[in-house]
Length: 395
Image (cartoon, rainbow, N blue to C red; front, side, top):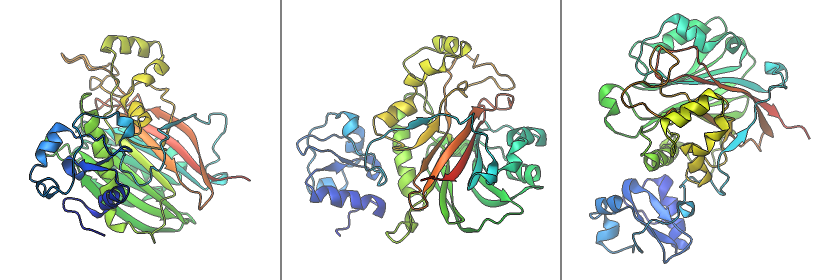
């Protein structure tokens, strides 16, 4: 294999594969390779092209860039080796009628929570509210925090769960934190616990609000799982930046562990402040629809679902129906949307996505709840919680 500068191993395969099929177009900013189905049409972001003038790929004339106009984004590769076909995000209904028997009817039941804390200190009562009474029945309790305060929230979580659960994994990068708790008394066999992190840059780290992702890989009873807690770039205009961050996070986390001999993950979960917004509609019409509980009229304006539909991010992942109020931005200490001079458009910035690839273990999943925790008002974000159960397929 030819070694290509400015590319790590996870991206190098894409370059080689593209060259072999004569469809290579060029190298853009941050080492991102763009591949199209037509040799005579290629794209380059002007800024990215300019930043690569000193790149050996250009100076030595090894590769040619055809054109500089942006193609239909549907034809761009998402650069995720897992994405062999375009499916977008599948919206799955909540199994309200199916009562969860926790471990009696399921292989593994998980409570998953994400919360952007806005740097605010919280009390043990707040954490108890976050955990909830039913959470102590779960096999796994997973919580991802963004903009977590300096005070150790992890200690408060351990205190809230100490009677039933113990900490299995913890991944932190300043204000980005991820905790995985498992039951104290259990027949579960836990192994291969690893953590990793990836920073995406920006000035957030200077004020203690790091952007990027922290992750934990864990195997329980032979089921290999990956949990990624992330905080992506803000502002409605930065859609492409968020897409790029998703791709780089995907390829950077646990890159050193990638090998044909390592079995793939059976379950992948992304949680966090993904920061995708509702766009193309003003803040007042959005608020009017929220008051009427017409959330379905807003999902078509949701950037994350739009980008997934275009094949840019989260191909083949699942998400519960967005049947709760957008979780950002609130006036702190209230359940009122932003009344500052910016009067931000309410958006579902905080999400939980999952992907079941358990063909080897014949797995499937039931989503029993997906909702926000509106009674918690210490931050300008509302926490989001999901109840996900893994089951053996029947037949």
